[in-house]
Length: 262
Image (cartoon, rainbow, N blue to C red; front, side):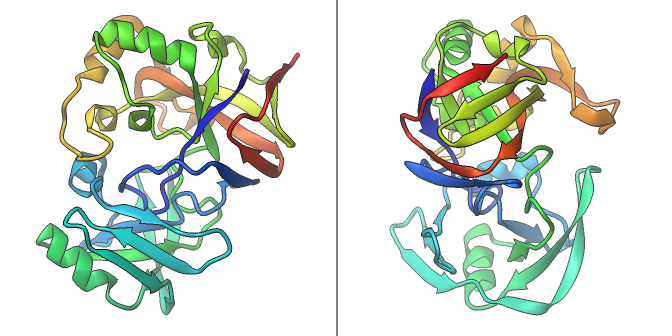
């Protein structure tokens, strides 16, 4: 097994990008979901609104504090991410409250013009940024091939918004890896549970439009799973991809060998 693809989203709810190398900390991929978009109600942009913002491509060079935005019209904006001193809490989907601070500069004007309503860019100051549950998620190529057969057409792995795509052609073998460790290059992760999926997987990962009914396929052949550790106990949807914790920090790059530690 080896790392086939790495995924990251610097600003939650925007376009997924694919770096070739990332630093893994105890909180996951460095800069992953470090920033988020906040509505006038002081709430994060919801999953049903992801499709609106997926066309926005944000990136941040390693070691830089500047954020770069590529807009659908071709404009490229690069600005520092200087936080306001005043912070506030955002309740995140009933999971936890995340402390954030608004980013100054032109971001509010740009995002408000783009969306047609007040949208602010914030930096997430709480550990783990705006990550939903566990620091990492991964999927395997074998499971993706099975899902493609169920859907009847190719699927861009970016729809899963998973940190790692691992080349392993045994479909859903990872269902049997719970509580075991994986070594990935110099990094060690602990496998937890399946990821309950939502409607976001149906959105085109570039343009944002709903163009594949992946949830319908998942409902047909995948069992429902709950969030781990008793989070939202009444919430369960078909599981695809897997949560993981970080046991040992380090660097992961494309092609790194992946080994299951029995």
